[in-house]
Length: 354
Image 1 (tube, rainbow, N blue to C red):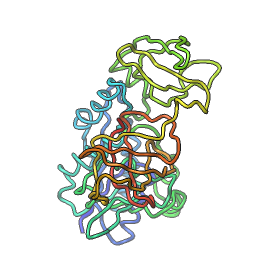
Image 2 (image 1 turned 90 degrees about the horizontal axis):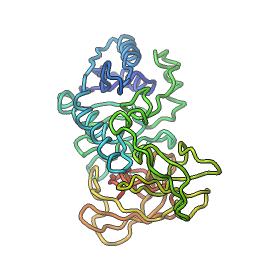
Image 3 (image 1 turned 120 degrees about the vertical axis):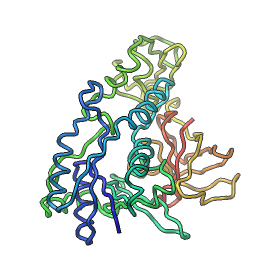
């Protein structure tokens, strides 16, 4: 069986290589480069990543190829992010990176020649009714299925997630015991393409700054100014520069460049228990073919370890409504609403919050 393994230089993907070799496979290793060398707005320092990936490959006598997909990345994912931000929405570049780059361009260019592509994502695949489904990871804190919720059936049926059945501390232990080069490396945080670049700096580079008012929603009182609605997202609490908080962003007026805020943790305007999801995408299939009735589900509207219980109601061909069992803070249009089965074992698909 021919396996392509994607390395990032981190501990998770190097443990994938170790586990595959232990099972008798000799995977071909690839490092996907998406940052641009020398571009001041894309400081994706790949050097250390490539160094650690190369050391891992050498340890197991395997070859490593660096695949440069920065142009594809830029044309697809970064452009998508900027376009959504400009519209006042909150994009999720990581979701699109997995769909279009890691398992899109890579598959078309290289993955197609292999039986499987293995990655260090915390996720699993499940076989049900003769089909492959995307399953959640054993470690709920590390589960990354919400970042994979836009992949398609061809992608999920060719993916291997060797660490999906392990807890993070077990992965770290395996790395230390096997003396892997990245065993003690800290987990990377942040958006896939930004590396060490600050998110606001990235947005400023493309959309600039434009002063606007910060207004209290309930009273209409001007509280201060901001540098452009595109720096702010619904539900945001930090970075508003207002005293006497906590203050939360409740809504944005894109035309007038105004941000409306409310004060306090229990403010009703911050919460909602219903959301619409557009362009819903089923990864494998619709397991609940009968439309119209309320279906018991679990779901996520941001990357958290908790799954929220709710009901899914179909409203159009690809339009759904989610009725949440609890009030949700900061429902941000543009983010993905990710839908799971009632037991939170299968990631069924996702759509954009409208």
